[in-house]
Image (tube, rainbow, N blue to C red):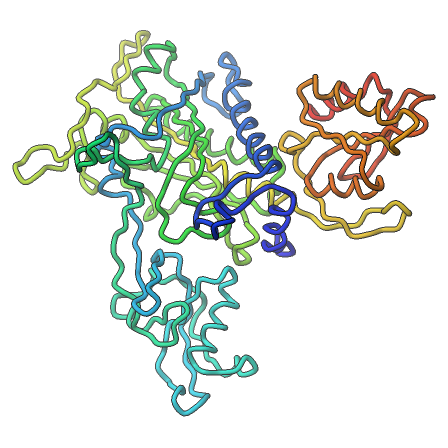
Length: 548
């Protein structure tokens, strides 16, 4: 990944219609993105691959490899706005926040754990700048190593050629590692003097909205910050309507919203995003086995669809990282090009949530720090956030056992997965042009299941019946449900390169020999191999390759 530049990927994304800045003609809107014609197909294919692999192709009678037993999988789609009490009992109303700091000089706001910096001193420079005072120089640059050096040059009043006069103390860290005593010595981004950061404070990430015509505080509601709670509050409805038996999973794909303090890194951290989540309900005695199963299965899913094992890790959370209700969480992480070498960004979290969620919605908001049956109380000694009072336990009619199920939650970001597949697919290599000479080409090597366009159909020239024959092939592929395109403009080599750049796996060319031998040329995007395939077998051949 070190050879790939994020700027190149972002440029291609706009040029070829994968991603656009939201409201771009008005200057954009930070933290929001629009998917173009190619991007919407790529993201849809990612979601369809997930839904097929988790739900529609699931065999409920056979235990998958690594699973303790067979199990059911069903799906739901729940509303974006729910009763506000959902978020109070889930803990989001009180606890769903990030720590932020403001810069008093620039009036900019930053997430406390996203500002990177290094300690530095410099006694070389102009009369008003030299100092042996140790300062924490910060940056928000995508390349923090370069960014912190550039910031330090400004702070110490040095030209670039004197960068070696700066003495560094330790490596890059984040602002949240500083003590309150050290924070006044930190120099904010775009500032040249220390002491402009405010003390960190909580910032709730939920988007507030109004439901109803009066607009009073009683009408306040929230856009959901996650899709999971819609599944938990429908636990009984799913059990009663679907007759599923523990263990079983409930899947959902849907939009979520978080008012991120500093959205950044393209679509990696956005304010509007889409999740692909499973809440897997199981018996407490077998929950650890199911946690291991889902952790390993979800890691394998990304590899099967083309993410390189060199760029992908499964990181188990340390004890101090775990949520108070969790007995285990593992993140599937990817080496995105915008991250420093050796660092990874989260694609998906697989969490062992215990029975926290169902108990919260039965009994009320639980105490974060003490035993899980202790409710938060208000000043009068009454439960601060009352639960629904509904029985969300499960009764096993075979064992006659009643219990509150434990939950394993694989929670993936559809946008982050799409971005990872896009970054992984991006390559620059060489291929022959129309004259047979090797020229540089940009190619997106998507797994065929994810490629926005499955095949492109070309008549070699616009005469001698080739366009008509090509349209017949195009229509046959369309009728088979394949997303294909037709093009007859430009030299054939140029058309190949256009398709390579959007990741089309196969190009089908109708040439002068087609009328006599009844065959077409199928060109492979990655190997550049060209083979002759009978016209009548083209659709079946493309379908076979997609299955392979």
